Length: 340
Ligand code: CP
Image 1 (cartoon, helix red, strand yellow):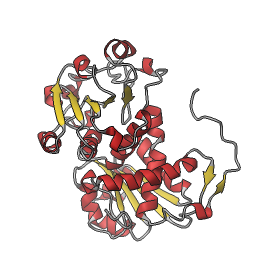
Image 2 (cartoon, helix red, strand yellow; image 1 turned 135 degrees about the horizontal axis):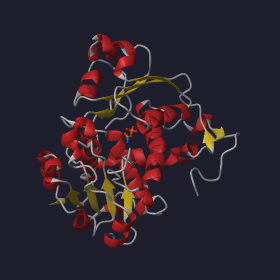
Image 3 (cartoon, rainbow, N blue to C red; image 1 turned 90 degrees about the horizontal axis):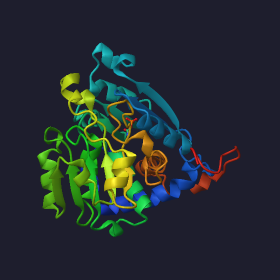
């Protein structure tokens, strides 16, 4: 893929070579993400961050990544604060906003909406999540995290064993992730979900056609017992026809500290694309795992910054100019971020 000037809409666009390029640049972005260095390479550029569905991580980390490259951000959140609430089309919104900014990130509740939006503009559009469709940048940062956690390069992930757990039907991050992991050599997937919430058949068939193994189970304990990575997801309540429909699945795949200690192999990495549902009765990754060193979810969320910085740098064609405007930061930065 030629990154420069491209829309980033689906994992289908990526090859293994693209991942190597992206992760090499992401690695170079680490000192900027860690607040050791700063750069002004995108000074003057503006990101339009359009979120028509709730978000904490994607909206803030896309914005922060752009800011850390020296660019500015214009946000809009929710239909009610945009002219779509007055009936404006995706086409009109896209044509107009692309006259104001240099690159757009969009999240929208309808599958295919971001592609439709991108078709109306020549500035790059990045899919921040389209309904139950895809969330490509989440999958990219997830794979970046798997590499870091397991301390292996992409070739070293051959024969990876990973369990995808939870709402695999509506969870767009797992849709993107299985496509992305399918670019590797012989991955062993275990899909742990109620039968009603299993991964769409076309995604399973595509993985199998590429030589990967896919095991399906409804039994959490069996599904997580022999894997290196557990990637669990939230029940996507907003995609169900009614709350009672979703309710019958809530909490059925909760991983607690006791479950982890009793059933997982030593060193199994725990991941989640966020947000995890911490309400009583949900707890897909229980709070009692918070001090478990194998809980990678906070490091995973942090990885959103270098990976999204790298994507912006590549899409805007400045990946080799970042250092030219760089210097050490002058403000106070703690030795480590978060709770030690
Ligand atoms: N992972 C993710 O998309 O989180 P947000 O919904 O908070 O953006």
